Length: 163
Image (tube, rainbow, N blue to C red; front, side, top):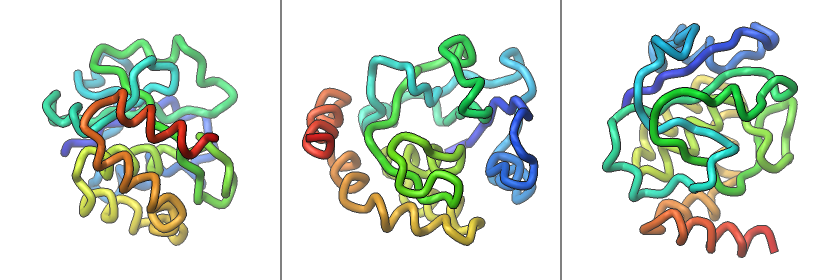
């Protein structure tokens, strides 16, 4: 699956997971919405959860890389199929254990896993010392989400983890 990242460049370059993915040739960075391709847009404000059913859409996964402080609804104005990730916890050193505070690479890896691209998920995470720990930490929910058929099923499974 192609990985594209709408890159804002407003974070610490030494901790930027998007830039590292790009350096390894695992993702393509885009500086504006116009150059960002149509695909599945990871959008925490979307009303529909990502599910394996979304695999039928364009074979492109698009994430926004920006600071959590500047990530407002307007930041996600890219054209595409907008989907939110379900409940997962961060494994990165900055937000370890915090729900929904994923780095760009964690969001991409979770999406790939849910969409059935488990090997590609492991590959992108393997470039980070803490990366594969994300899969270990979220193994049960990721496997559950990946076994769902629809977005509604994913939301129902998510409710089990949130209750």
